[in-house]
Length: 207
Image 1 (spheres, rainbow, N blue to C red):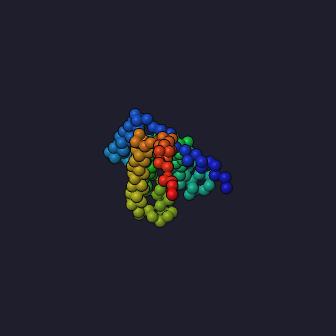
Image 2 (spheres, one colour; image 1 turned 60 degrees about the vertical axis):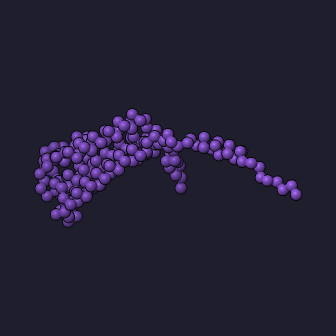
Image 3 (cartoon, rainbow, N blue to C red; image 1 turned 90 degrees about the vertical axis):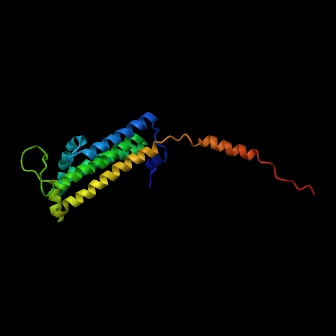
């Protein structure tokens, strides 16, 4: 089986300058504080993902009602995940972290929607506007017979989102750290060669 496309994963990540590293880590730190302090359960980035969510209903709706209802969340998660995978193969560290971070951020939005399944107190958008819409997760939870556990499931999904976001930031911090203390491979090889040349010749038996 031809897996040449995986050869890209052997390459090093593109280097990240120190100012860029500090700037991006500060950005993620501030965003996490913003998300932690949000009382509504919705963040500004969620409004960017809203058209993608609604587009998912239209796209997956061709495959039946259940997939159509699930399609909003599926596309909402698939778009940043696909971008993250693309940038992995491009070896673009900052872009991979950005897409992966907001992939996990979407879990917070999904959890808010899940927790609203029984109360349905949130205002939500339907494709085309007007009309009686279906609450995605109320429909799915009823179909699965777990509607009474909506808030518990939402809490688990929210925890996954937080763990994922923190994990991405930690990964970016680790992978973008300066490597000044390590010797370049060429220097290390030359050092071993010089050491080998300086070894004294073996003792000869003159008897």
